[in-house]
Amino acid sequence: MERTRLAVVIAAYNEGDRIADTVTALTAAFPGAKIFVADDGSSDDTAARAAQAGAEVISSGKLIGKGGAATLGAQAALLTEPELVLLCDGDLAGSAAALGALLEAVERGEGEVAVARFARKVGGGFGFAVGFARWAINDLVGVEMAAPISGQRAIRADVLAQVLPFAPRFGMEVGMTVDATRAGYSVIEVEVDLEHRATGRSWRGFAHRFRQLLDFVAVWLSRRLRNRFAR
Image 1 (tube, rainbow, N blue to C red):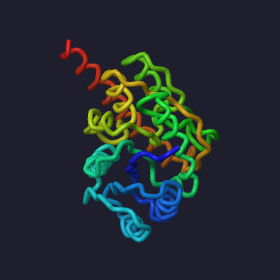
Image 2: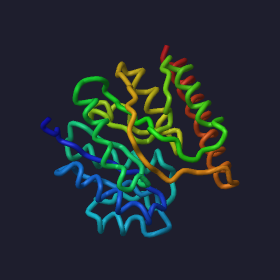
Image 3: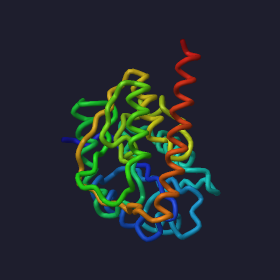
């Protein structure tokens, strides 16, 4: 299948040890794609390593959260006039090459947004945050998702333009799914064999998931209010 014009936006925060491998894998897997790293004000050498690997770095300059930084990266990507945009996280390393399955699903017309469902579960807590995200999406738009907060997504460029700006911080993926569905687009899931840096059942892991949960609640409330005022 001939590859459509593609831009890749990699969300990254302090991924200095993995970002170069992620960029390299994507460059090899998708020749000719424009690759952007949306650096959320990292305090390590993420930006420098990404640039050395050949990516264009779009930096927020300070920590503004994943949704804000990814919005800047997506806006820069759309200026290149792609047909498809691949969104992913900076910690995938070499497994990022498997994301072609998402692009192929969108190219075949199976959906306007394709979300990666990890083939193997690594790390994680007790599932409260993910469970709420799953419930919130179903409550708002009636869509059931196995991987509601997966950041690995292929999306048609015209659809991406309609769901920007992303919801703040970790609410990005929940907001994107809800906004795309409300706009009349189909969001599907595709199982992909990926690896990433998982948070475990440590105090840091629980703190991270609590921050995620707060952002999921905030985006759920904002979309509930938006829908009410739109009537």
